[in-house]
Image (cartoon, rainbow, N blue to C red):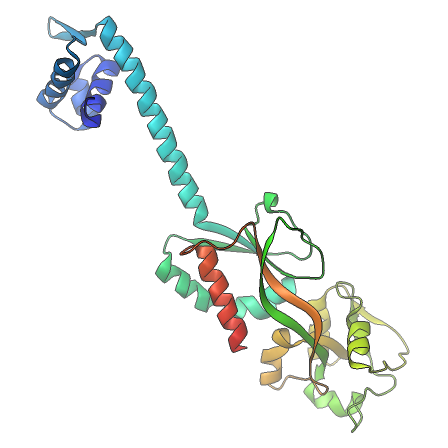
Amino acid sequence: MPSLNALRCFEAAARLEHFGRAAEELHLTHGAISRAVRAIEEELGIALFERRSRRVFLTDAGRELAQAVHEGMERMRSTCSRLRESAANEQKLTLSCEPTLLMRWLLPRWPAFHRKLAKSHPRAHIHLVAGGGPFSFSDGIDLAIRRDDFTWGDAVHADALFAEKTGPVCRSELVKRWFTPKQELRAGTPLLHTRTRPDAWRTWSRITGTALPEQPRQHQYEHFYFSLQAAIAGLGVAIGTQELVREDLRNGVLAAPLGFVEDGSRYCLLARSPAAAGSVHELLLKWLLSVSEKA
């Protein structure tokens, strides 16, 4: 079979019906095109062009081979383009993360991962989007970090990151106002609730066996993040999660007088399949696990 380079020269000459223009297109000399065509003719034992008055015309055999080579070249170009696009897409991932976790836990740590990603996968990019609860990979999401408070089915691969630990948190200077010396919630303490985690206080009360104080009125916020911000603002006591308020505790802004207990849920990294060796997915998973262990 003729070499691919010779067939490439023939395809251009046949398509343009001109050796000179084929040479210009391929950045070769006229002689290189002529030699390639002659080599194919000698190997096949048949003339592919008629040469008349400095012009060339395809023979019937030439037209047959030209069509076959053209179709083959187009298929190779199409396949290479598809594979190149596929490889590029593998380097562009969309990571969906629960909003409060994204804002208070992931984003503050993201620059460290971004440096690691740039070093090992310089062409890769991970697009972060906020989202909670059920989702579909068909919506353009490649990976997702979710708390396992809903069923995601057997078609989803899950890697556990860390267990959820919850407890009452409030502004540090207000601990004595809302907690007794025996570390009990005082009657009338404003408990901050959230629509996205409506059972947070009841779950904590059930796990710890702690009775909740009577409340003159309900303090409810639209999102979990808002209830934590309300606690920081001194508006009451919220159920916080250890990972999401760790920096506020360390800085002395918030206090957790009763500590934290596992509520039976955990955060997981969800994907269509297990992380492939050397992939961006694997790099992200290992980093998330290392960050969780250091916390």
